[in-house]
Image 1 (spheres, one colour):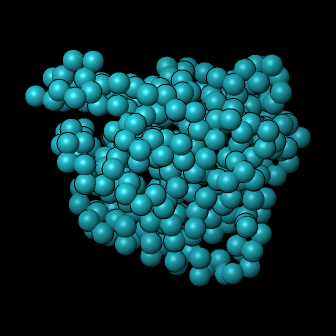
Image 2 (cartoon, one colour):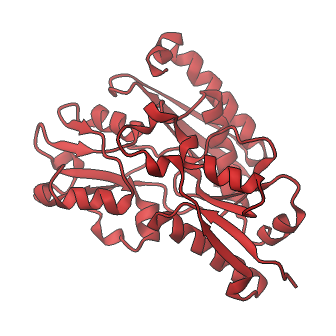
Image 3 (cartoon, rainbow, N blue to C red):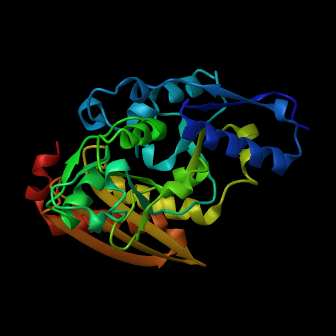
Length: 313
């Protein structure tokens, strides 16, 4: 019987806490342990503190993980719970992604604001309408579909963005449907965007758990709650990202789907203005997920040519 308290590190946003509590609930159910066997430790990250500029200008995805990973390495926490799409492809030495919970819905959700309720879908917005998003991928995809729309930076956690939306700062915004579902906010969605037309970020909809390499106690605890198909899909998507040096500075979409022992992957890269895009598809054995993703990344990079990436740095 587990006796030592397992410390679960997380950011302090409502969504991050919901994900940490979901992880704890699954561990409780899997092992029949009392709630006091786990402690949720809230850690403020650089990404939480920086609100005055895009993350792409401040350091990228690692801003949401740096302080949490330091706590892992210092043994102040035992595991860290993250949104997979926030994770850099390169982890600090000594840390690994040791489990993925079963993936939620991968789609993006459009939410019309108070000034846009007459246009509940992205396609319905009037010419020149203002849409807010902090994601370069979403910005580029919006511009690709609706070049007439003005897209503005829209930072903050889910609640902050929804407040700005209600105050009329923008006509609409986009958020991950999975996050809204985890927060019990699915009813505010005015349009679900199909993944085929509006492909998600690599890792979107999946919760991942990070731990110290070789921590057998943690691996034993996590084994019953890890979802193998999600892990395979994410291995492919993260390899695709890594091949493209993906970060918050690059508009990249990618989605792997597992069907039994087979994997099908589709990836998209765009220029920030959405005017140029390249797509790639690949399939193969699910056991070869990382190789499939890496090869797809190399192929799409060759397809786009060196000039395509020149403005991304």
